[in-house]
Image 1 (cartoon, rainbow, N blue to C red):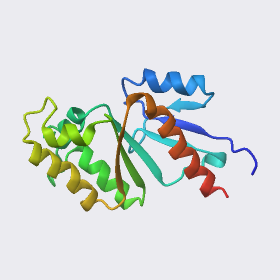
Image 2: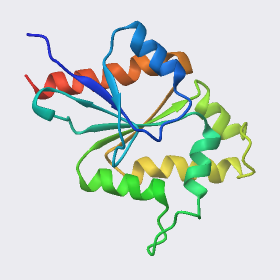
Image 3: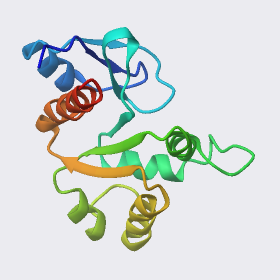
Image 4: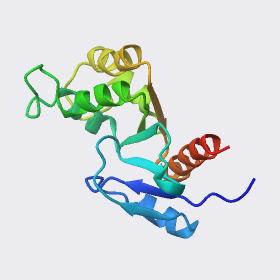
Length: 164
């Protein structure tokens, strides 16, 4: 198979990503930053081709719970910014990967090992029900140092499959 020309697109609102940028540079992974309508990472290939996969990164359970409980961005339907993003992804038939930088995410979730005062059962229910409600959603968690490699791999193989 011939080499695919591509680059990773990182949302301009994505913060605290020095570890990702450093890994991309070290591994000669081309990237650019621009505002994305959904998610934090996509890949763009020849002729502007973008596969139907988007990655949303959360640095912690606290960030995710905060996003789920955010009332300041609610619309007339009661959906906050994060929920609207999930709805848009589902309507657009995008695979939505929710990536959490916490290798002990599930353990921390069920034991309440996070800053939020949300009851662990309620937090688990909120988060796990997302996958039931949004069939296009995949929740994954891993160590911070593995994130750049995972982001690149998922996106690269998505575009490779599309362009076969």
